[in-house]
Image (cartoon, rainbow, N blue to C red; front, top):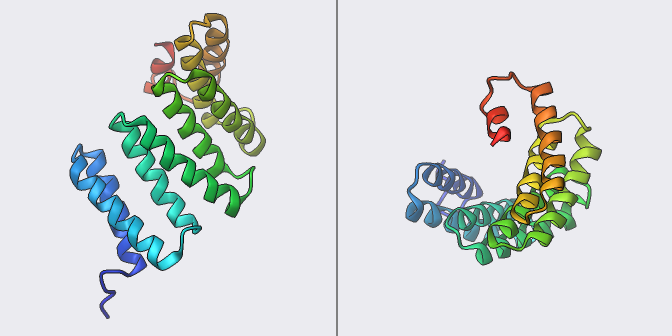
Length: 183
């Protein structure tokens, strides 16, 4: 049995190829596969399907990496809207979207918006994963970086220390994430 070029499994494969090419630095190929995947998903699943949100998220991350922050934010907001509608405001996937938006706004230099989104993500992850989860440490670190960019060094140190303490508790002291937190 052939699936045909517009089958949803083909869209999933295109999405995976997009990620593969992006991770290998072949950005022109990556964007082509992400767009093919999105087109099939929109056609077959409709504009409000969670897989469409996944495509928007990947495109947002792609444009973030390419330093096209307005496009990144646009796609991350589309992804977030679908996730909020389909999964509810407290879903861990919503927290990921908030974090992605926080990172995009930080890169764009809009630090207050970055803090707002990172704190929304942190609240969900604390509620869903607990205070000792490594993803919580990542968010503490993200907040430390934003506060450092704002030159609010006391707050940066506060969140940086929380990140480091949690990483030291959860990871081997030689783990690269521990060293990155010292930076």
